Length: 210
Figure 1 (cartoon, one colour):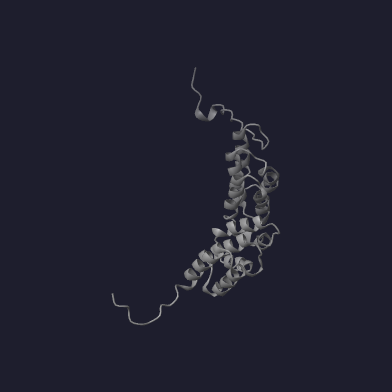
Figure 2 (tube, rainbow, N blue to C red):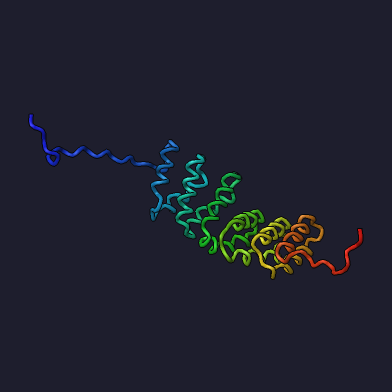
């Protein structure tokens, strides 16, 4: 029997691509379904109602990765409700994802820092801890004079010690004066002021003889 030329051979049938579903009982299949949404225009709408309820770590991580990659304010809005969860791992993952979305955070951070719940304000400060945005100090500074929760004010001072400017030292000291009975805030104030303004000048004069 003569051999067929390559061009005359019948093409091998293509394997059908498996279809993955976000509600699949198998978490591996759900993770593939999430990854298939990467770059999809409908990804935020598809993932937002599922994120907080997803129990599998790998699937949840894939969801955060896709949303952080989209990085729109709407994608951030899908992540922010996780900050209210009792699940600390979910909250931490939400903070880390938000830290990768500086432009989206810029559109939401002032509302987060004004949330009536002090825990939510603390989570907002956690987002700002490693957020690469030049306006972070200016978002944090107003808390020094207006916030009534010592934990929020102390954390705000800690954040400004990392990203603040020397012209914020007076506001930091004024905040510490509002909470003069709080040892932690006094310590945070001293550390931040020394870091931003430098150590106090030493008095001039002869050294004491040994």
